[in-house]
Length: 323
Image (cartoon, rainbow, N blue to C red; front, side):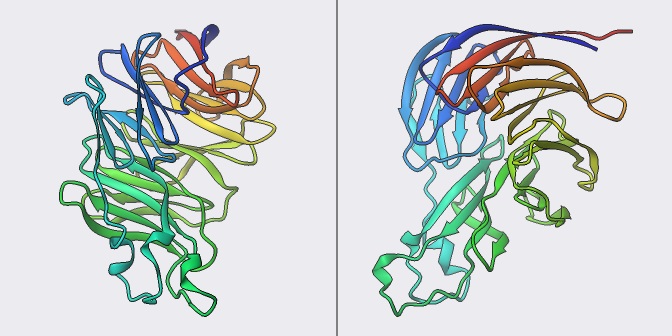
């Protein structure tokens, strides 16, 4: 496979490390903590405030043209934003925790909606409130992964919880499943909350987590520079390799080719062919700053690259599959 990367533009406004594209290939969004930017091609059309959004995948519903970012829904035509509020009391009411636990001490550090917006996976952390006083004790978990029914605004299940210090997790969701990863990785049914597969083996902390287009693979990047690809049928490892000399921060599957893009703090954008066993490095490109996010255009012609300098670099990707 022959792949060529060509940097064609740099956008110095409307920055975000999470990308989502409408099916028409023209409308897209870039999201950063607290803000979503709506684009038409290379024209920034509107910036929308979304308080409370920190990180997590972005998706644009093909039918309703709704951008979903965590608990927020944004009409990509009008820019109207609505938050699907989850009552913070839900974070404490379902377990027999100390009554001194203040709901305001809970926060979501990552959220991921399913593409249809009916389910939301949320990773929370607990920070003891100063309002509790020196004698207050908290007996509940320090962090959780929760699954919500967005339509009913109801908690479906507690998927994971920490008994020690809170663990920072990355999340992913496709049409039927949700996943969470830190040192270990787990996969659940998005409707029933049934655990489908897990691997609790301690691995270097993951920084990004993505399903491929048909949901058969799950890729993640790690702080040690490695990247892994797993089969979603049982979370068995398909490939794991040293992709970057320092932290790998982002991964993205090509929408139609067996290609995976990776980016890291080493300022390198790399594209790997996933055919035939071991990943093969088929193209790379050096940028001026470290990479914080990646997103393929739905037609596969361009790759958006978010950088530490709050810029979005547009890279053209051309492929030629040899016979």
